Image 1: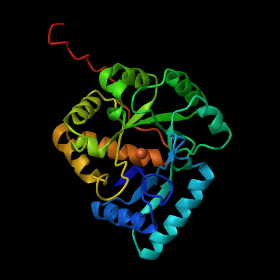
Image 2 (image 1 turned 180 degrees about the horizontal axis):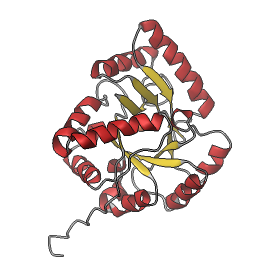
Image 3 (image 1 turned 120 degrees about the vertical axis):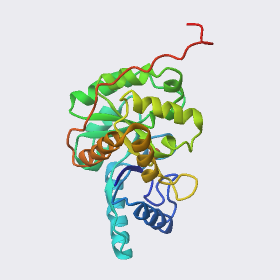
Image 4 (image 1 turned 45 degrees about the vertical axis):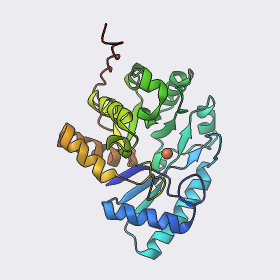
Length: 255
Ligand SMILES: [Fe+2]
């Protein structure tokens, strides 16, 4: 299995704090059958800055440690970019890392409370320069929870999305799980990833999430999502079914 979203690089954000933490996470990943992990440290989220070159160096170091420890998991470079109005300029300036340096996909995080108004413009500009934005954990965004059509519009205009494994299996609560199911059901999600920060409160759960998808949606969707992770790290076009709008919740069942 390939995990596309993970805070395993030690000492760079709110994920692994020490080398030992990172090794422990790598061991847990191996135990689930994960063979490749894209390290996606937070960047410009108001707390952490992790630029492209720093991440590439850290990934190399971690791979050396894992090799010494004999752990059969490979770390690939990535970045979790909090959306900012100058994302395209920063990309052109060489600050932003595309997933596994293939120049094709960028992971983009929204603030939890809302989807900034300039998102559509930035996504359009990114796509003009040949880069596809991947919205991370849309199911945890409050505006998308209230108005899922916001997500539909972005996906319909060419963005992709990644739901979090823990959301699929209900670790963030029933409400988020329900929205995650709707997102999957309406063909608005293209990837599942762990967003693991540690081995306790924010662990991987990737295998369990794929198994849940297989039993609740069918094995075809599981295979499609797993194949998409592989296509993404190789910079190839992923499988995307036509997105469907999520119907508005009825107000007191009247309308
Ligand atoms: Fe994350």
